[in-house]
Amino acid sequence: MSRRPRRNHTSAFKTKMALAAIRGEYTLGELAQKNDIHPNQIKQWRDQLLEGAVGVFDRPGKAMKEEEQIDVKTLHAKIGELTLENDFLSGALTKAGLGSAKK
Image (cartoon, rainbow, N blue to C red; front, side):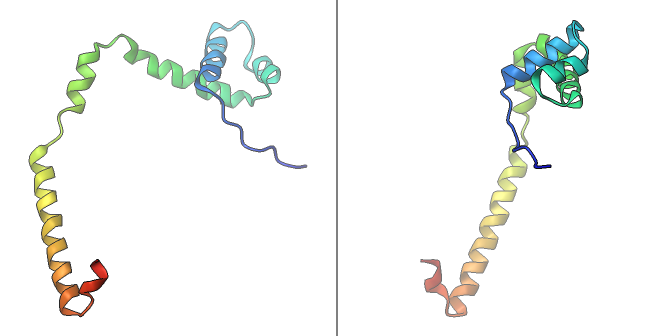
């Protein structure tokens, strides 16, 4: 038995299947058979839709503020650390006679 190539479904198709599963007009088996998909796949899409539905009514500004809380001091410290390492390693390459490899 040969394997079928992997298929990529659009998000619109996944949403359509998940909503059909939530409505309950057809069983998962019937939906799967109609659309040539495994019932477990439809169940996973349904569960993802239900989990993501919680955030639909959140205020959009609230999510943005959580993303903006990046610790700038930590990032600057990391940049300084990496710059120091870079300078040290370039000096070591020059002493080893491989300074032209950088160019």
